[in-house]
Length: 347
Ligand code: PMP
Image (cartoon, rainbow, N blue to C red):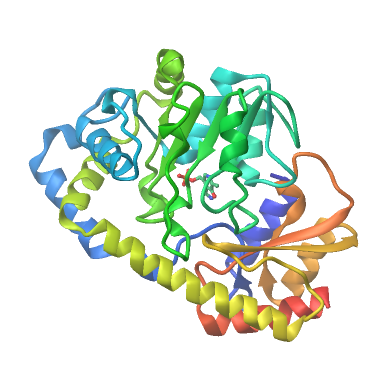
């Protein structure tokens, strides 16, 4: 990420007059605060292993829960193959550390995946015959499904499959995990960041069996293990909370927010072209106009709205400007006002 963008965004995050549509933040009101407070207190008081070192692959309890959720979607994975990671982000880094080489990511993809891959020693490209990274269910930043299942299954290279938003499609259809059909070459990545709470920093990686030892070695070398405390709290939380009901509420809330921003943008700036989100947290607007991304962000901030400039999502530079606007952690009123402010800049 361009440090100048980060600096501008950090500075603006403290301003009351700026509506924040940057970063893929889940809605504050959906975080299971009380249940999590109780789970944290319970495991701290009652489970020694919550405060002790643990194994690099993560706790048996949590890996069992991850395996059971995948099994319910048609992917039967031995829990021994699951590595609990510090968010999906660390799973991306570990995958690239082991795979190296070049990873194809398409025209635009999750900006921090590009950073993770390149910092781990891999290269990224729009298209390439070898390894491929896809965001299954709902792509970030595009907000729609871009996975062509048949084409991917007909391909032969390694597939890094990120399911960050797979359970957050507005139509409620959670796709069958690709690991169910190509277990020998899918690097399956999941996270609870978008559905439960990103602050716990829990995700997971299921590498192909032949790469399991190398991936686990990378995990241990990076940070020994994922936090025992948050693993124990999450494992407790999911026995006390109806996770599917929480996800259903989240889908409905994000659908409403997406519609609020989409409709307000259509009203305020009818010339802007974007695809209606099918799920997830954001709208991707390609302006088709050439210009300087950083200057655009400055103009947005002057107008009182913060977005993510598009160049960070591009594996290869393009001359035209795009922005990602995340509706996920704003109210419908804020979204309507944000659209008016964006229209002043982009109109
Ligand atoms: N993948 C995608 C597509 C994401 O949008 C995000 C979060 N913005 C991540 C991975 C990282 O998530 P985590 O909090 O689990 O590290």
